[in-house]
Amino acid sequence: MQTEIQAVRTADLSLGQGEAMVATAVGRQDDARPTRSRVAPLLEGALRRRGLAVSSGPLQAVPSSKPTDPVLLAAAYTPHGAAEQTAAVAVAPDDRAARDAVQSALLELESALRSRAVLLASPRSFCAGVDRAIEIVERALAQEGAPVYVRKQIVHNVHVVQDLERRGAVFVDELDEVPPAATVVFSAHGVSPEVRSAADRRGLRVIDATCPLVTKVHAEARRFAGRGDTVVFIGHAGHEETEGTLGEASDRMVLVENAADVAGLRVADPDRISYLTQTTLAVDETAEVIEALKERFPALRAPHSEDICYATTNRQEALRAVAADSDLVLVVGSVNSSNSRRLVELSTRQGTPAQLIDDASEIEMHRLREVATVGLTAGASAPPQLVEQVIDSLAGLGPISVKERQVTQENVQFALPRAVRAI
Ligand code: SF4
Image 1 (cartoon, helix red, strand yellow):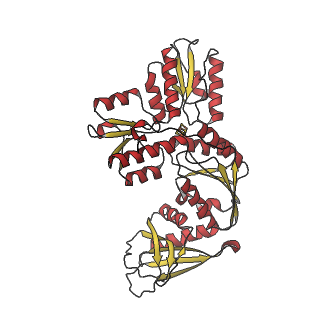
Image 2 (tube, helix red, strand yellow):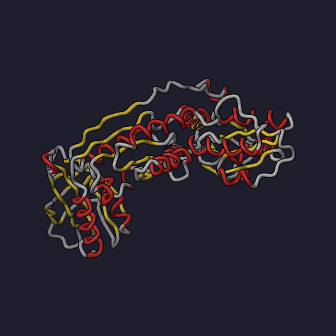
Image 3 (cartoon, helix red, strand yellow):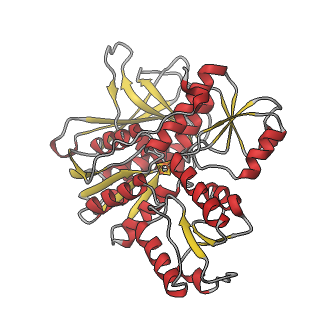
């Protein structure tokens, strides 16, 4: 790869020490059609990891003799016979450290150039509960105007949250941050009865975006506790869904996170015991915990139907269908997304390394060096366009063939709550 360094003159571009601007497209001043840079997100991430403050946007490479104008480090390359690609970054002219970082990032990019296959897991990305929760906030904004308050992240994805914030949603941790009489949306993960009472006390108008499949588990918790059972909840401590469900019958419910926890369980009556689970657990690990519970408590009663939801189960099945034939699996999802993290763990348990990425900028290019086949999926809260962005970025590193492996079709839809249905 040949890297060319030149001065550029761009009317509104001014860069300080430690700053860089990655070109999403590069052109000359008279170019009607600047060349798009597919690898821009990959370079952005590589430069951030090298400590630079990075922005991005289209850049014009216009020769300049002004010593204060930024310089453009640009590389044109033709990966393995594919169409020519461009990578370009502007930095301040006297910023030697930034230039070194750009050169090092371009070398990393060069090391990842090759043709590859992409195995796309299906189903992936948004589930019906997440679609519904986002639409509820959008409709509340259209109905009432900004701001609309949302308790906790509406779904666990940084891009979804930032997008809704830009449109006027205000995310709060607790209800005392919501002005009296304002509207508040409860997130898809559900809330405990205590939170509902607190909203009543503050006179808030509540729109409930709890996923109906989480609501089902809450109803089971109330029913099982009401018949006198100790209810063992298999889930992750601290997760909002766990806190909400445990709150339904806190004096009769106990949390176990794994099979090892079962040995230490103390229950009032071992003949009156049932279990429920978080909706986004790993199917195989949960089966082990249930087995351990059954061994210790033969009278254990199960919910009528699986609590692990269809979307979690399907994404894990689809992951299995691609992981075995992949050298690396990329899972698009945020770090606090339970179902996304389970996909990473499942792939690793199957023997295929996996990386959780919020978007293409988090792909570590050096990890792609030996990777001929990339498995690609996304957790239930990750927007589908981020998967497209990953595919586009990989195509900037060489010719790719994309094959989808679909294990099942999803056609689940949930009705909206009455409060926002009229729009
Ligand atoms: Fe509902 Fe399952 Fe989606 Fe969670 S992952 S919002 S439980 S459908």
